[in-house]
Image (tube, rainbow, N blue to C red; front, top):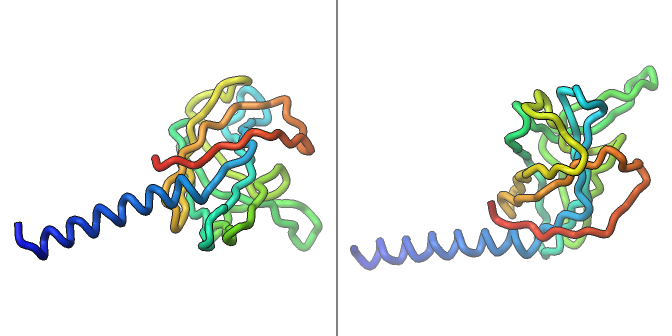
Length: 162
């Protein structure tokens, strides 16, 4: 292997390691939970607080989970008639360095469409959040149908490279 090839391989490895460290050290997920409206629902939603503890702005650009055919970032918007509609968030959700973003009922959330299994109280689902800079952050999200919109827990999960 030539010196140039060794240098390029070492640089690529360093970038990969620093990207993994960035995700684990800068994105935190606070108080995640998921729910569906009924036991037979074909859709559900996850809520949480995303905290960027780093010094670089980032953006949540996607999510995926094996429990649904489709996973999207959604929000609620009021139309001209005063009716609230759910819609996909285009371009992702920015999270400034040192700031946080609340994903709450009636606001921004992760939407699961075409559930392949029921969301059963007490179960835990695996969710992967994809950030523009931090990359993939894996989160274990409890199913909590009893949660009231105003309830705020104190659990904190550190992101991990997934």
